[in-house]
Structure formats: C-alpha cells, structure tokens
Length: 179
Image (tube, rainbow, N blue to C red; front, side, top):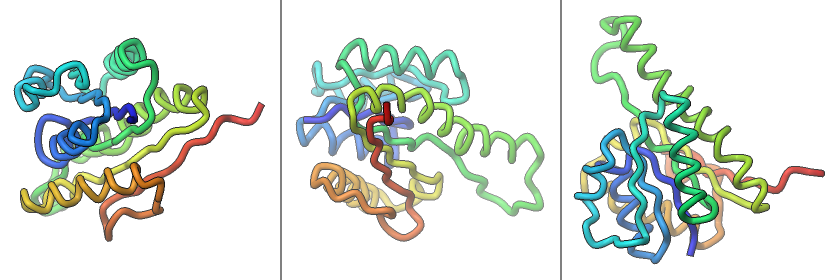
C-alpha cells in the first residue's frame, strides 16, 4: 500500500487515478480547488481518502496540503501532478492573461508542488513523481479509466518508464539525497 497525492482529483483523469488507487488499497490525498466535490465523488473511501482544498497556484495552500497529507498518513510515496488546463482555441487568439494562466497552473504550480513534496520523499528514501500535461485529460471517458490503470500498474509494478504512453507525461523516481 502506498500513499498517493493527486492533484485535480475531482474529475477527469485525476478522478480516475484516485478511483484506481483507492481500488488497489492505496491511501490517497485527493487535492482539488473544491474538496467537497472530491468527497462527494468518493463517498465510500472512508479513512483511505483525505480530500484537501488546493489551488495549485497558491504557495500557502500547497504547503498546507502537504502538511495535512504528512500529518494524516505520515508521508507521500507518489505525487501525481495532474492539475492543469489548456487553451482550446487558436494560440493567436489567446490573451496574455490566458497564456499566463496556463503556465501558472500547468508548469509553475507543478514545480512548486514538486519542490514541496521532494523533501518528504527524500527523507523516506524513495518516491515517484508522475507529471501529466493538460492534454492528457482530453481523452474519452473510457480512455481515462484505461490511462489511470496504466499509471497505477506502472507504479505498483515497480516499472517506472520515462514515458507512460505517447504524449502523456512522465514518471520519475526520487532517491534519498546524498549525505
């Protein structure tokens, strides 16, 4: 059993990864801007689920969510950076604010959360970081469940490929920092 921290956990691929991790007996910190929506999506999860409110662009909320996770479960074995959004129109039509928002959520927030979780993983001597691009969540619903199983299988099986499936993201293993 592992401890999974999943962002964007209330819908789409994040919800499917949360569902699959819980079904495998893992403990899950399901982070989303709306923690109540997460709890409503997984009513039978019991003590295996900790739903935390998280706007990934807020450093204070990132710190609070990671502290809540380690306080409840004692660590984080797997971080799934899934929160994000894309631009669903021509790039030339995008405003500067829209482009900044994409980078704030899909790049800078992912880096901030990873930096917050890395010391926890390094102290434990191991950890896995799954980084998914916003486009990974645009698949059909049946494909999302399949993609979630691929991620869970890769992590549970100890096979940590550089790429999950074409264009979908990466999985990286964290080792204890050298003394």
